[in-house]
Image 1: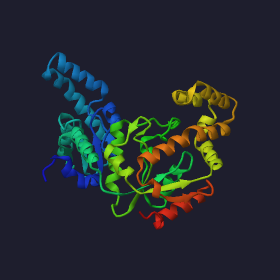
Image 2: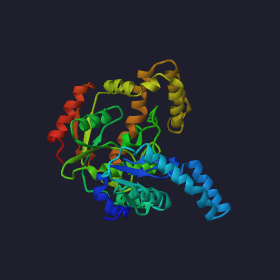
Image 3: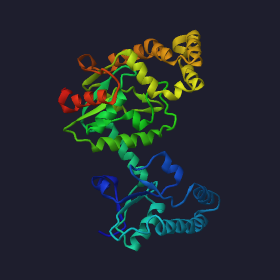
Image 4: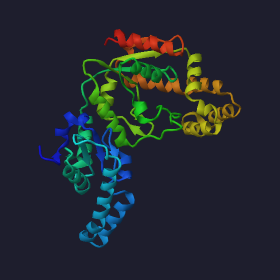
Length: 355
């Protein structure tokens, strides 16, 4: 094969995991919005340089813009060769892409090929990749989904984490979305990704599953925080067999106190989130919950939130949206210790989740 090889995404996909490095040559802000799974960012033009070249192109002309951009591109690529890739052997095989597979990735791929590396350039760039992902998620793989249901605090996330740890196939949508899926679901140290990055992560997980084995997923609503679960995947989940996880309410309160300890320590932050429930429960009820938070009566508040908000909303939603919930396999947890979740995970992983 002659290098640089310019190949479309469908041609590259079967060997996508065989590249030694996937290089996104776009600017840092473009990369932050979304990128190919596993890619590293090596801007051929960074954000500031890209604005300079683009402004020159619009205000002066293409020739002057290229005169400014060419030495910037050359310097940036040279820096990567001298630093990041200085130790790469002749056999090192990178995949390079930019927005549309044009000048930025083309310049990098050409220099790499001249050095002697078997470099591949993605034809059509990120734009072509994104079009492929959008189409693929309209018809996701036919997987044996098993939907883990359970009221808030019943330990669904912990069960999925334990299943994953013992080798089961798990699609953790809340993990991919960096959100726990409720009004209090924002993670204190992890902002949510963009919608496109969320979809890329979902696609990357789906393509790696073995279709002959079950895939465990939580009974999410259409939105996880600010992110939307792809419609076709949501439809598959709602038609799939269900597992009903049960845990006594006092233990659910204990679990939630552990998982949401950042709110237990910050009454003001908790009260700010509770304001979103005013239209559902009225000013008087929210003010009473505020008072509980301010007085440090967190277990009592959590219990009331379960009884008066979370449980009624969840049970109404699950009955309406998940068609196989009435026939769900019941898994009862006797506690919230790691061994309790391990026992439940083994029950499901070893064949206890027959459809």
